[in-house]
Length: 93
Image (tube, rainbow, N blue to C red):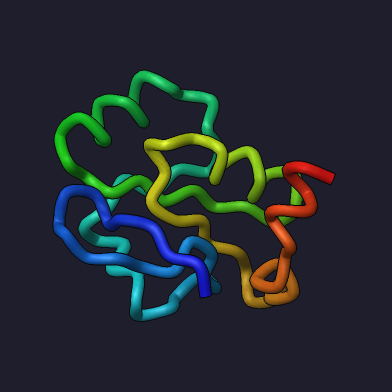
């Protein structure tokens, strides 16, 4: 399982998780539906707050994880298959 830093907490978390997974304490994070508000992402990151993006398709997962500000992506239970994405292949072909 690939992991990323949980803001400035010093902890590592799964980079993709199903919504509700207890390993991602969403109450500690800025949770957004997409990465369109880059100022909010950057402000949270600069302040040490983890950023979590909700996604329901491979393209949105890949776009979110391409941003260094993003700590994790959460996907709906119905899209659990996104946990198995081959991000290297999707990124580099």
